Image (cartoon, rainbow over all chains, first blue to last red; front, side):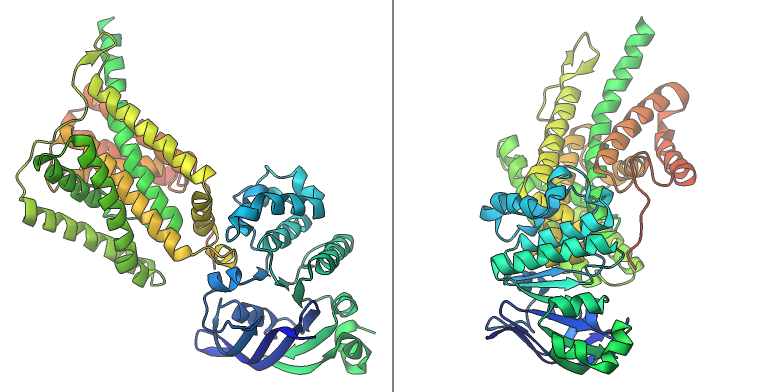
Length: 235
Length: 292
C-alpha cells in the first residue's frame, strides 16, 4: 500500500533547541501508525512539527503534497485532522459551535457532517447546546475527535486520546476510532502512552527516545520485542 | 413632580452618552479579547474617522452616505493598522504592544491637528433636536440610543450566527486550535481590528455633534469607555455595553446632583479605581487564565 504520510529526516525545534533530531516516520494509506516513547521523548513535538505548530526542518510528504513549507491552516485544509494534546476544544463555545468550527473549511457539508458525528457520538447530540467546558473529560475527547473528523480528513492525528480517562471510556473512544477508520478509510497517526492498547490497534509502530527513532516495525514485531515488552508493556 | 421629571431627564441623557461609551468600550473589549491588548489609540482612531466623515459631509455628500463611506474606510484602516503595526509586536513583551498603541494615539492626534488644525469644528447631527415624551428626552438622544442599539444587535448577531463571527470567537479563545480547524487566525485578528475601528467610528460620529469636533474630542470619551469596559469586565462584550451605559448615567447624575460638572471625569477615574480594587473582574468578566 502507498504511504499517505512520510516524514523524512524531520527535525523540530523549541526556540533554539532541537528536540527532534531527524526522524523518519511513515503512515500507510488506511493504516494506523503509533508513536511510542516516554514523556519528553519528542512524540508530541513530532505531531506539532507535522502541522507546522513548531519550527521544523526536513521533508513532510502528505498525499503527494509537500507540507514542510505550509502553514497550520493550510495543512488542516489539505486534510490533516489534528486532535492536539489536551484536546484543544473551545471550552467557551457550545458543542455544536465546536463542531461547526471543525467544518469551517467545508461549510456546505457541515450540517450533514454534524448529524453524522452525533451518530458516532450520541452523547454529543444530547449536549449540543452546552458549553464544551462543561463536558466530562471523555466527552471532551469525543468532541475533539468529532471536530477533527468534521474536516473529512484523510489523516487523523491523535495525541494521547486516552490521557486522564477511565479505561472503559478509552475503550469506547478507540472502538469508535476503529469504526470510523474502516468506514471512511481515514489513516491514523497516534501518540499513545497506553502501549499495549496502541500496539493492539496499530499496524506500524515507532519507538522514540530523546528525539530519535530507536526501534520501528510492525506493531506485532514491537509487541514481541522482549526489551520493549519490559520497558513499555510491563511484562 | 418637577424633581422626578428632571431626574428622568438626566437618566435618559445619561443613556444617550452611555450608549456612546458603550460602543467604544465594546471596541476596546473586542481587541482585548482577541489580542490581550488594550488599544489606547481606540479613541483617537474614532476621532480620525469622525474627521473623515466631516470632510465628506463638507464636500457635499449626504450625511448617511458620508457615514457609510467612513465606516468602510475605518474598517480598512483598522485592518491595515493590525497588519502593519500590531502584528510585528504580536509576540513581543506586552509593554512593546502598549507603547505601539500609545504611539498610535499620539500620531493620530498630531496628524489630525496637522491636517485639520486644533480649531473646534461644528459637526452636523443626523437626528433633529426636539423634545419628545413630554420633554423627557430629545429626538437626538433617542436617535443616538436607537442607533447604538441597532448596531449592537447587528454585531451580536454577526458574532453568534455567521461562520466568520464564530471563527473570530474561536480565534480569540484558542488560536492554536483555531488554526488546526483551518481558520486563518491572522486574518480574523485583522477583521477584529477593522470592526473595532468601525464601531469606534460610529461612537465618534454620534458624539461629535454634542462635544464638537477637534483632535482632542475623544480623550474624555475614551476614559469613560475604559471605566465602562472595566466595570463590565474587560473580557465581556455584554459587560462593556452595560458598563458603558452605567457610566453614562452615573456621570450625568453625579454631575447634576453631587459635584460640579467640571469634576465629572474624576468620577470615571474613581470608578476605575474602585472596580480594580474591589472587583477586578468587573460585573460580567471572568478571571483570566493565562496561556503558558
